[in-house]
Amino acid sequence: MKSKGEIRFAVIGCGRRAPAYPRTIKAVKGTKLVALCDKVGPLVKGIKKLANDDSIREYTDHRKMLKEGGFDAVIVVTEPEYQASLSVEAMEAGYDVYSDVPVTFSLEDCWKLVVTVERTKKVYYLGEQMRHTLLMRYWRGLVRGGALGTVLFAEGHYIHAMACDRFWRNSETGELLTWEQAAKTDRRVKTRMWSMRHPVLYGPHELSPLLKVLDDRVASVSCYSTGLPNKRWKEIPFPCQFEECPRPDMEVALMFTEKGTILRFGANFSSPVSQSHWYHLLGTKGEIETRRGSAETGYSYFYPTPVMHDGVYHFARTPEPWFYSGGRPSDDLAYALESEMPEALRSTSASRATGHGGTDFYPVADFVNCLLTGDKPYMDVYEAVDTAAPCILAVKSAESGGDRFTVPDFRPNKKRKPGEMPEHML
Image 1: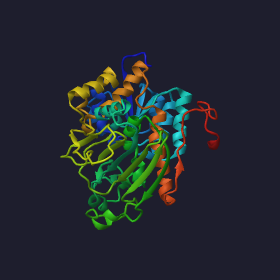
Image 2 (image 1 turned 135 degrees about the vertical axis):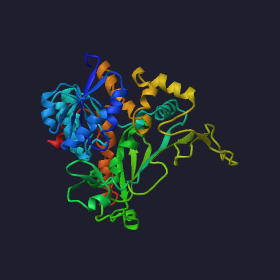
Image 3 (image 1 turned 90 degrees about the horizontal axis):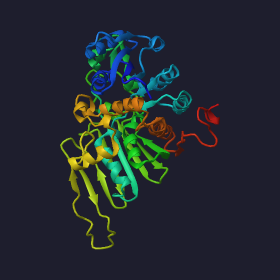
Image 4 (image 1 turned 90 degrees about the vertical axis):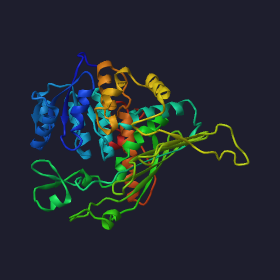
């Protein structure tokens, strides 16, 4: 808990996601952006210009920035493979950390994050937006209140075709390049689209809200992949595409949770769909799901009385205005606000100024609220790695032909005290 009434932020990483943070920090009360860092200097200057604040300090060396200090918390917005190590460095240097999705690509990093938080007592917060939405808070209330009965099956997908300028970047300026532009220059470097070799690794965006709604964790996972070569890019290559990006079209993970729910997650970064995120829950008393297309609705279907004959349960589902940036009618949203959300997170007008349909506001606001008040985070470090570890093991499963793997529980137990690595990691 901070004694001062303001949280000063430093941001590491000024790439494609970084422009959202000056807007979000400005929208959250009690915050100030004081430092920016990226290995590519022009990117730092670009975000500083966007923030419109000449007092923001510029760095190209994160260790120098951490040593000089003058801030309370660090936001890590780099490529996923660097997020965990940079977060650990920042916490070791004495700062609380807010990291962009998806945590990490390795179980070793998951353990390092957990142990560092336990040892330093710093807050690590994963900036996954979907779990904070009013809709998912409402769904959480439905599940906790028993409206669905026992949830037997939960599923979601993240399908997001990438634009032609998502694969290359100018090595000197950091500017994103189309395939055509990249083909004409030697000053090009690959973006994170190349290091994320498996789409299932982006599962935290779906597991985060679903596991929060279920108040559960994944206990085991298996996964199948369509493999290489990528069919979409073979059939419809980008204009001037000169190299294959080695990532499967589709991967689907089947998971079993600690409480006995079957969970299915599908991921794809190459096929076009009308709506990227989709969620669905099926319980013993009914089902709920979000819309599959941008001009569609979500649906609910409740039938709490057991039906044995005559097919009378085959009535139409109820259309619902459900998506992550919306929710139920105002009375239900008001209930979600009053029952779940701290006062600091109720500024829906402020949220509209931030990205991802206004949802970028909520995790940052909750992180700040935790630092200022000492409240428990809506996503602590254990819940964060709970979203990453199943996806990491799903990759292992896909590469082994669908074998089933047990997902570790990262919480302290009789065999592991807080701040200690598990025996198998020593």
